[in-house]
Image (tube, rainbow, N blue to C red; front, side, top):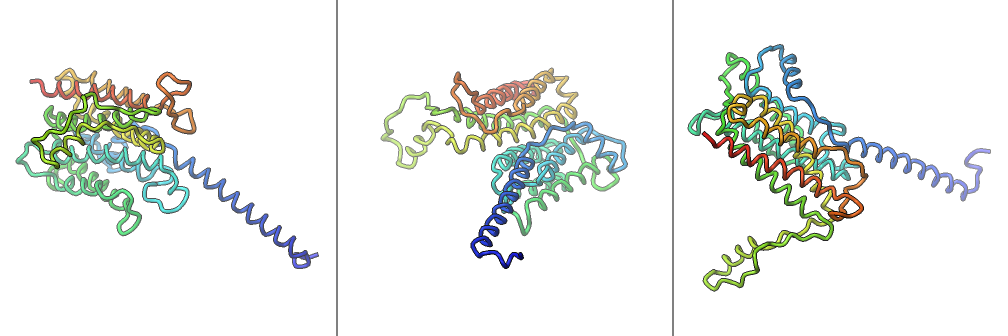
Length: 348
């Protein structure tokens, strides 16, 4: 008996069953892809990646600054070409639902931008009156392109241009005959200026993570002051904003803040390893190598494996660990070491 000979009710049941099977298969595929694409990338050796780059360009020299610039290019490459590619600008499932890895990309991207800005404005310039490197002047704006553009031009296309500009700078750093000579100045004052930015980034992340405690509200320590009659309404509003308490992070945003901090820690870990290599002489001279090692160790600890399928928000001494507070502890330790590093770079 053919399908057309079956009663109409049985045909409808068969059609619904077929549609249900297809939907179930699609859901399973989406879940598997989501789990794969949402996994955080592992760390890499900044020195080994620099050597691999010299092999790709058939060169042997690796001057000071080459490892740092190559690390920035590699960070951008990982953001773009990890499993699933760049997720933040996805407009279709499963990428559009993967907000955790999107937050991770944003955290890593912020550190990449800071590192590229430091290279353009400080590390590659002898003094404030010296001309900036042309390729770095092109690379930095590309990394500041909007992070959620999917077409005309896409975010990936612009970031790829930034990577190419970094590679051109590295080529001139290796061989001045390829064009205008490129420079990298591993000085204490240059590193101090970058560490100032790192301190602010880590401080902001630590504060937001600490405000993720279950039912917490970080209140201002100062007493509530009455309005100042000598101030205008606008000036009083500014004072009120500055003295207002920091509200707790909404529970729906806790995982986003956590993964943003994970991405920032991942990128900063590799930048610090590159700094440890290219600023080695000045760090040894200032007796600051151990301080950088403390920062690196704190970043490594912050990237430990996550054993829960969701970011827990338990109390400080409750049954379940508070992942945000644990992350905040590691970042605060790195921030304290960054403060010490800044002071060491300021000493004569």
